[in-house]
Length: 228
Ligand SMILES: NC(=O)c1ccc[n+]([C@@H]2O[C@H](COP(=O)([O-])OP(=O)(O)OC[C@H]3O[C@@H](n4cnc5c(N)ncnc54)[C@H](OP(=O)(O)O)[C@@H]3O)[C@@H](O)[C@H]2O)c1
Image (cartoon, rainbow, N blue to C red; front, side, top):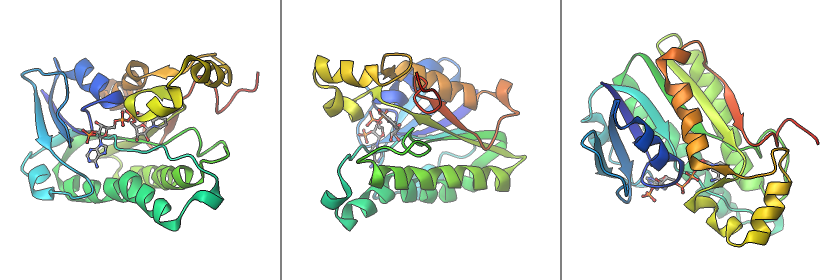
């Protein structure tokens, strides 16, 4: 069985991903809290990317598939954002990712695959998104550069979602009016769900799609590319 390391996976998109892949993969979920779903093929490693324990990741041995899920949504006008908040956003979204990838690089197997997370707000400018767009923009650049550097051994892709119904987005979706308003801004007239995003991750990780690398896949109800 292929070995999957998921940083995150206890909730949201990552939780749906491990549910979907648990029959066919040996999965390590590295996160602060344990997933609510259990399966003999899933082990939980208590882990905080802001206080990393690289030895614990290196003890996992060979890795065939890697997904990094930690992220934030911190929407404020620039005038209300402190420089410290930009740094915090970069730490969790970007530096946490870079440090993890550096730590496990030698463990990636031949024909392995990595998937990272960006946001629709990188390629489409949106008010109040400056700190998260900057951090995720760094991830998009990193994705392409790393894909070039690690080819042909490791494929590297990222997903850029619009808003998805997960614990991370719960404050933006905490009443029906907000959900309706946000859904209406998407050409497909609804918000995304975690399973749809997990499905996109599985697609990019799958060996059947092994001619795809260096891509940023928009999974966003049409928001990034359509005007209707
Ligand atoms: N949901 C959206 O609307 C949306 C939109 C655009 C982009 N995205 C991106 O999609 C990705 C997944 O989002 P999601 O909505 O599934 O988020 P989520 O519901 O908050 O889940 C995030 C996962 O990351 C883990 N995590 C967070 N901080 C961590 C830390 N310090 N150390 C280790 N693990 C940590 C969490 O586990 P623990 O809390 O147990 O540690 C959890 O399993 C994120 O990168 C996000 O920025 C989401």
